[in-house]
Amino acid sequence: MSYPVLPFCTYLASLVFGTGEADMLFVGDAMQHKAQIDVAKAIDGYDYSACFAEIDSIVKAADYAVVNLETPVGKPPYRGYPCFNAPVEFADALADAGFDMMLTANNHTLDNGPKGLKATIDHLESRGLDHIGTYHSDSARLEALPKIVDVKDFKIGFLNYTYGTNGIEPRQGVVVDYIDRELIKKDVEATRRAGAELVAVCIHWGDEYKLLPNAAQKELADYMESLGVDMIIGTHPHVIQPMELRANKYFPDRQLFLIYSLGNFVSNMKTADTRGGAMAHLKIYRDDKGKARLKEASYRLLFTVPDKYKVYEADSVKNDWQGRAKNFTSRARNIFDKHNKAVPEYK
Image (cartoon, rainbow, N blue to C red; front, side):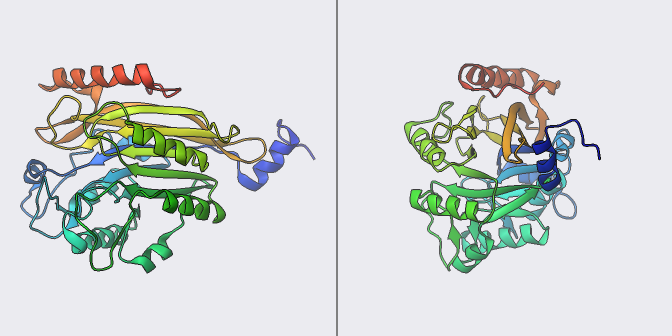
């Protein structure tokens, strides 16, 4: 009997675990300001199909794609800032663009009260979409967690927390996962026990409009690193913040993928730094013992052109918004070039 030209242990591991790799993709805040809702209004319902047409092939090429859904979706009346409520067609368009998981623990998740939180969950479930961060009830949370997703035979555990909900308290039994160190520790440990090979904590934190993380973010990231978390994916500041791929300082045999902020995925925010965001790519693989590991990471810059609220790769913007897209990319690259660790721009 002949074997592939691999170390024998690698060959045996491949029989059990497979030899493939998987590509994961993360983007930031998917927002719905009033101007976006108005542009999407159609004769019958709302049409967001054009919004992601320029980048959906990239999203669909990933084995698993994650977006922060920073608005409730449901029935009218629809509203933008400061208290969001968007048509369900917006979530549908994100799903049609290729996103597999929607994060719902963010500061706007209670903007339409408990009924809006429940309606959002119900619609995502009706589409068969993975979601995490908010729940109908304590019992629903117990059923939903640990959340472990099979991504090309890799078992990836997901958790999602937010710093707050703009002062709106959960009512009628609904549950929002707020940042709480003991809760995070308990959840990470439970997710590992349930069989997750890698754990991703998606976290809504930080100071809005600041291009560098604050001390609290760094301290919390360090705490999660000490728990052995493999991926820390940050949102909320509405601007990009640095990324790192490096050895975990508490578990040197593991890698850590850390993103302090992905910025905006789609929005009607108007300052130079808020008109776009980053799309992070992460490749995972198995080593010769069959252990899931992080291999490499990179990013692309995205930019929303406000006339139709279409998301583009930032360098591809050629219309009247080209100058502002270049301004955004220049500022973002300046931060990434100075502060990223082993996360280059995608080529």
